[in-house]
Length: 103
Image (cartoon, rainbow, N blue to C red; front, side):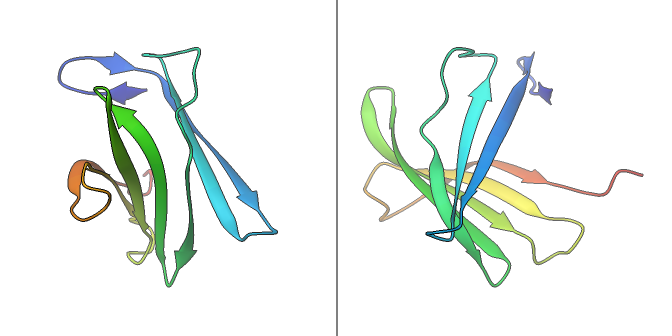
């Protein structure tokens, strides 16, 4: 369950690894659009940082999507999502999550 100031909804991220290419794919499915998977972001981890990219459409305009996973903090990884409307020349981070052990 994701909780935002304006609403809460259920969501899931599906991940798969292609051992031939060494790349991960991540799909997003949420309660806002329960009949459709988002375009997957595809990428890999190097030196504790995972970078994943996809082309998508936002408000009728083409964008690039970037997920960044930073696992350098050990038990406190950080994830962020950024969009680019100029083919990756610049990025606007619009969502971050910091994880901590349950305890």
